[in-house]
Image (cartoon, rainbow over all chains, first blue to last red; front, side):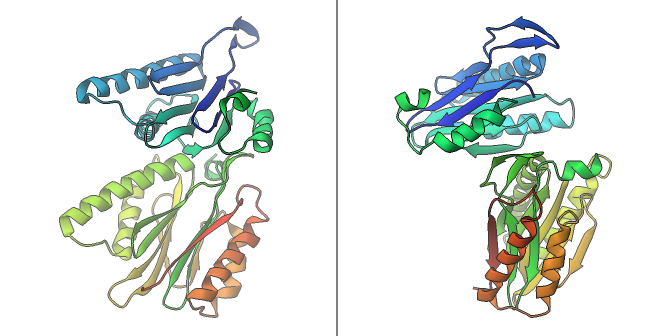
Amino acid sequence: MSDTLIGFVGDDYVLLAADATNAFSIILMKDDEDKIMKLDSHKLLAAGGENGDRVQFCEYIQKNLSLYRYRTGRALGTNAAAHYLRGELARFLRESPYQVNLLMAGHDEEDGPSLYFIDYMASMHKMKMAAHGYGSYFSLSILDRQWRKGMPSTKGSN
Amino acid sequence: MGDSIMSYNGSAIVVMVGKNCVGIASDRRFGVRQQTVATDFQKIYKMHDKLFVGLSGLATDAQTMYEKLKLRLNLYKLREERDIKPSSFSHLIASMLYERRFGPYFVEPLIAGLEGPENKPYICGTDLIGAPVFTNAFWSPELAQNLVRHVRDFVASGFGARGFVEVMAQCLLSAVDRDCLSGWGAVVNIITPD
């Protein structure tokens, strides 16, 4: 719940941001943790939540997407990858749940940029702007105010 | 926990029978407890031209349930070479939910459709473990108590398709105005014989 993730879609890009702290209750273990994992050349997965679950689940998805690529010779599209991810998270929900909140971002040739919000219970929604964690209480309202459809990249990073 | 899990994501869906038509309406909010995440979330799915299903309750289970239903329906269509009847579909859902009696899907589905060659309006709702409720007026899951009160007033007058849209929309909107966990717009689907 405490890991903040923010993402939004611009005109031909998706921007993902994640906080870099790694805490063990009150002790700050690390402040340069990279919580955004590269799934393949055009997909990113930002994850927040329980540390072990976060790393394990992201690697699991990344390796399975690679396996698909090796088997079939083509990479999975963002929509398909997001649904696959949701399906796996939903399957584990009833067995041994992963407590990770995710933002998956991807860019396809036909569909363009897309962002998927997936919460730890595997509820998924394709969105133009999304955020997880305590930071979402602040950033969502700013995004509501400032986000416009098709922002050029300079404006987006502001 | 059993009660709050159904209102974790917040949703309001209602089915109503009109004259020669059925309607199913839902709100569009997707929330995580008190925080609204999205305002364009889909809760009603078209299974075929004469059958719609609305899935209220926990969003993840609603999405999983929809995927399972789509699979079952596609298989049914391949085997039977026809579309499933709404009444058969409601029995299918009820049995799928009861299979998970002691670890249920936290969804309360509502089915709206036109049955048979005469296109008789059919609505049905079930609770999360598949106890079906067959009525011929209206139904809404227990969470949306306000909806029931609004809808009851309108049911007696059998509305034709055009007025029906307005009735359903207003019922839903006035009910969700009082419920902070549902709202942010509405979608009304009316099924008519044509």
